[in-house]
Image 1 (spheres, helix red, strand yellow):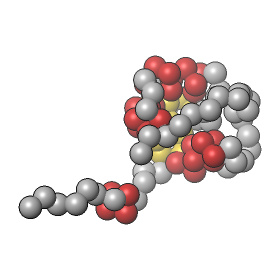
Image 2 (tube, one colour; image 1 turned 45 degrees about the vertical axis):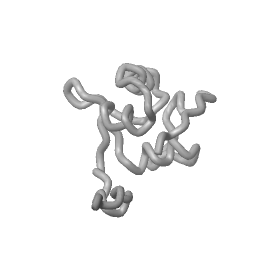
Image 3 (cartoon, one colour; image 1 turned 90 degrees about the vertical axis):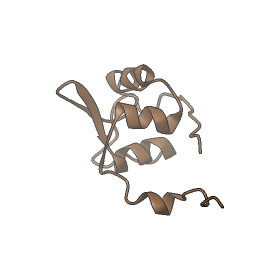
Length: 86
C-alpha cells in the first residue's frame, strides 16, 4: 500500500527567505529567468553575495499583485503574468 501524496501542510513552514532556485521551481521557469527578473527589478529582492534573495512575504505579494511589504519596487508592474505550477 502506498502513502498518500504529501499536502502543503505536511511540508512544514515556508522559509522566510527565498533564493532564485526556489522561486524558479515554484514558478516553473529557468533559474536564469528568475535572476533576470531580480536584476530588472521585476521581482523585489536583494543580492547577497552572489545570490538573489527575497522574503516569502514580498514574493507572495508580488505574485498576487498586492503591495510589497516595505513599499513597491520599480519594475514590479511589468505586466508579466506567471502561472504557478501545483
